[in-house]
Length: 338
Image (tube, rainbow, N blue to C red):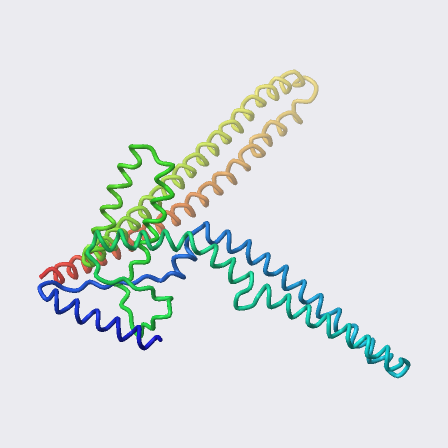
């Protein structure tokens, strides 16, 4: 049957080619399995069906376990039973086995519930796919469109003739159109026209790929600059907080100094000698932490400065690499156009 179909198909191509020698025959193909696996409604329904199939498998395993237990029990008690009881138990076991096999065939057979449920799930989406294929074929003048996942054997298929993604876009557009406003519909149509032009022109598709790469490089460069600015801002805030803390510490030290001086003057008549060492040791305790904080700030500043230099160097290297890639792509595009 397949050979006859292939012969008829080749004959049709020959006839069509002879009748339309003035133009090139356009052939495309789709992968129905790929399309179904990328439709959200079908995936959700398939997941529910798989859960149901798992439940059927568990029921079958339970029946098998019950039958095995009966067989083991009969084997252990066979020496103690009469022939009539043995025949009765064997008949019961045979009945349960037939019942289990019948249930298994009903659920997982060639015409079982699993196959019929899968066909019922795929039927509405397949109808939508056929409609989308007809629209694409008429709009883009395809002469033949085949299903790669069908019984037709395709020994080789060039990816550029695969219109499966175009069909998926048509299906997704149909779902989205119901939720879009007039302005969004207009923007969607412009986007669709652009995608159709890219599909029709492989060179344009390559250029679009280059543009996407450039856009990604620009976005990455902008993100790196933003991170660098945030790092600088954080460094500035930390320095300002450190300076503010130092000023507060100095302020507290100068406020406490007059009080101690006043106390020294009050006690000058009784203990002038001991008051002087107390006043001279006070500045030492206030300047020592300030020196440590200054050293820590300087160390932190040097460390962040080094990190900024390294990040700046990395950004310049990435920018240079992107520039070289851009020049290479431009040269490749000019060569292709020539």
